[in-house]
Figure 1: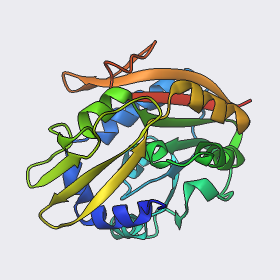
Figure 2: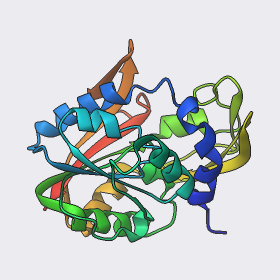
Figure 3: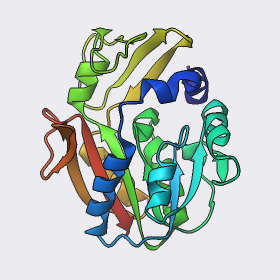
Length: 251
């Protein structure tokens, strides 16, 4: 059965910002932008794919960026509209069918967006859409969860890393292995119990999908938090770091 990402995030939307209130997007984006600048990033327009409730909008705007957001979930976009009104253009879009929304110096897809692409061919379709939206010399920056994060958050039982006070994130998988697809259940006060389904994408698979879409992988970095700071490492270590950061450009 096809997984309904929009439905899952429609259920998640009412509590999403509170659930993620400890995430410092301003600090996180500052680190990612500084790294992207080392690969030639030029300030201008940014397309936030899987923008959710718009948590990246203000940090990008404060740095001089013109922001355009899109997401598959009407519920998440409604939360963003309540906060930003007409100040940020928003489109309901499935990343696998991303139309050309403009010409952007930067496209970002953060907070597990790529991991929700769970079917064969999804990566290639999504990356082709991103390629069509990049300006000449534009960059694509996205994250992907590592196998260690899947082991922590999707293996069977309540995940301490992902549970928050009034809410429980319960992994449903018996075990994890590279390239697998896994589910977890989110439940608690003020949220309809629902399932999150994600796929682990090995680095070689991601690089191949980027190449098939006409994109060149410029960097793969490990991301972790140390003493409240975001740290990027090269080379990455999936056994140690919860996320990988990819930076890609037009080939």
